[in-house]
Length: 257
Image (cartoon, rainbow, N blue to C red):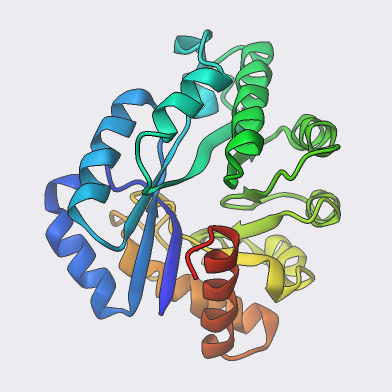
């Protein structure tokens, strides 16, 4: 049983063909899917999806790109929405993105912290997006983790070895996507090789970032098997070991076992 720990089933290209998308995932032994929220309109679709499909779960969060439109989004609003649905099992996607800067950095930080506070109070894992923002991401997570039971995943990890070490020192998880299959990802592969298998998850981030040999096509959860195969090669273990560990990690983190 494989778990796609991060996909966007509400996005066009997947949502419009969801029965078949999930059927293909199941045929590739992908059982559980976690559909990640990016806006409140995204959340409305996710609620429909998790209600229809037994093995699909969801999250609630505002992507850092979108925070400019959610400046008053706070811990209380997050908690009120999450408490209404038992299949919403994580908080995010939240975090910092200084690569595009679609939203002001201070606004991103403020909303990120609100998500963290909600995750702590709800005792749910936090799904973190970090791009060109390693220092601030780490400092905020480190500060907010003090005297809390914060659990977090750095999703679609592409960071430095130092960032990986810092994240592991906080006892958080690292999730790898199809990027590890790209030809120019040797440095990332080297960093991932040093991450204990007990702290790794696999994801697609579909419909984006299709792994080799599907580059250029719409990504989907069934393609996570290619991430598993590449991770096995990087870690010099069998695909079965990767599946066993990443699945157990997910089930433990999200309390589904």
